[in-house]
Image (cartoon, rainbow, N blue to C red; front, side, top):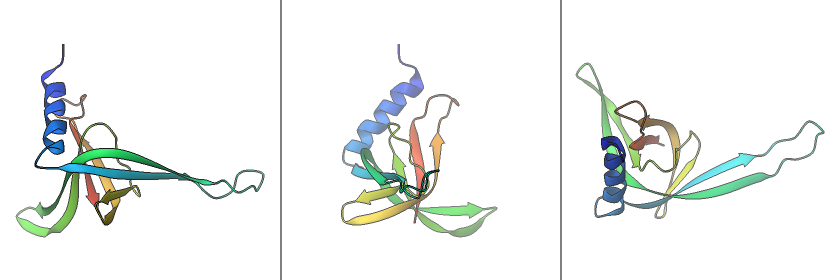
Length: 116
């Protein structure tokens, strides 16, 4: 039987797929450089389909506006990591920081990624 947080995570994913959000590509690269024998390690790219919303978010500290940043609120299926690319239509963003939102400390309902 699903917990309330698992039901909420499912509802968020459905909401992001509907009129409030869209489907994006989260591009992750790995490899590159050289191995212990001096051989070139090829760069591999993996594209993951994620659902979410991209919006501007204001950041505040003790009543002072620190500025606004572009933020992606992504479903709970794939965790974004710093330096991943998020392709939104014709625009490409780089993930600066990412955090999991888990109200009960266990079930992740979404990921929030600050983009640059």
